[in-house]
Length: 90
Image 1 (cartoon, one colour):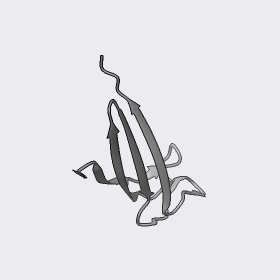
Image 2 (cartoon, one colour):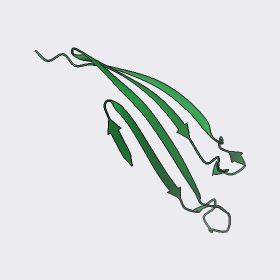
Image 3 (tube, one colour):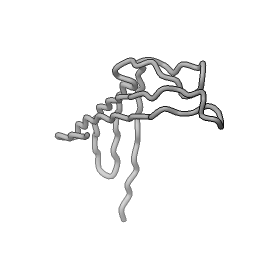
């Protein structure tokens, strides 16, 4: 889901990963999990350039999950990003 207004953007994504088996006999498995992520960003434009600042909230609900057995993934975490676009149109 994404909303935009006057250069501001807010998006939310929900990902579901189902149970995964760890062996060929399908006896051992990791349970499925849900991960929700938010991103808010603001774009600034100047002539043929644009600058976008992003703020991410990953695993917003702090769910405990495993991608690999016995290696827990991080709970809620944050990320900041900056993008510069050079759009020279001659």
